[in-house]
Length: 261
Image (cartoon, rainbow, N blue to C red; front, side):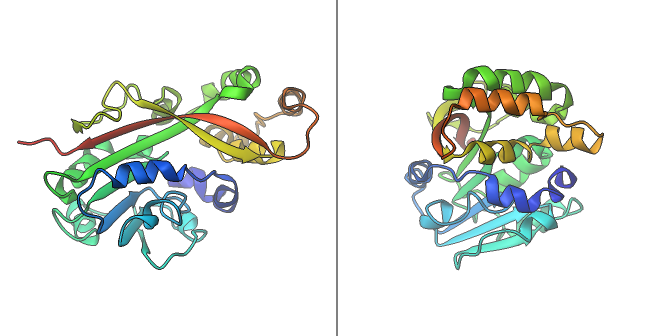
């Protein structure tokens, strides 16, 4: 997974949207303590920084397997970035995160479908504070409410090139394993649907999707999935405006606590 994004790290940092700050206020309200949060698969830090996790927690530990992504993170006095190569053992990762029962909140933003899930969930269950620690994972995909027609066509073009793990994102995490206690905000088999409003220009939207794993993978094989034809159709549906407009992405979230034994 890390290799798919290494070459696009700078574009990823520039073009991936920030998540609504209200999501983080909602998650922070669920944890009695606001001491330490873990942003797993932080990428270039979209979930870790201002108005996000760091707004609410005293310390944020943000980890990623991609050293290239971490070279493009935004800096914040509360956020500590750690490179966790694929060779990192469970005990090593738990120690890096502060030990058992040390984390108030875990988030994985558009990332968990790439993880070794048994490994990640085992670590999560160890480091989350019992009984009130919270884990939240979410994704968004090609569902944009006000660009339905063209995004459906884009999805048809890119879907054959998707890694099987990324299918979870296309399915809105409806089939993703999530073995945690339901807190009423999206559970295994029934994710919570959320609107994610973003202001973007068309060129920014095209740039965003050029960082998608399937499009990167196809390009490495000599195929440009966002062809001139597709781009022109997007421009026609977009309309005459050359400025930014509000887009409404549909996002999917699962939230839970460690199950009591």
